[in-house]
Image 1 (cartoon, rainbow, N blue to C red):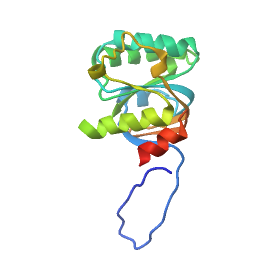
Image 2 (image 1 turned 135 degrees about the vertical axis):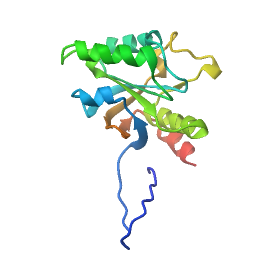
Image 3 (image 1 turned 180 degrees about the vertical axis):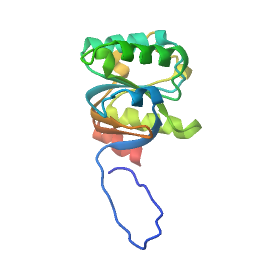
Image 4 (image 1 turned 135 degrees about the horizontal axis):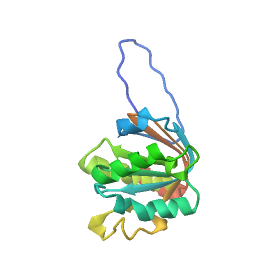
Length: 178
């Protein structure tokens, strides 16, 4: 079970490499990687949003719900920009190392259109969460913690994010694979 990634090479060698979890192409703002960002976050709440996030007010309810559980928050969306990104970055720079505000990661998906929608659906299935979609009447401002997915580990760098040990239903994963 997992993903298939074909990489072309100049050698004639063929090999198979198995990895746990799900790896996806992402973009993390450079300001996060300048700071000592935690490369692996344990026991995280995952928030998936199909829409762009521009306002910090959109993030507040999800942050409050995650921080009330004393869990880090990973936000994965089509695009996170503007006031939402600037406010989180400025809070990261001001707060102490042990602050829960240091345990939020904003991740932009590196996909578009149907591929982005499918990837968010895959993440939701893997983590046992739901994708926030305005087209279905969902809103981040009226966020409900039932939308959170959960993962044992989320590792990331500037170009990829790996989600390992999601809180998934095996039957849902099998039906999604088919």
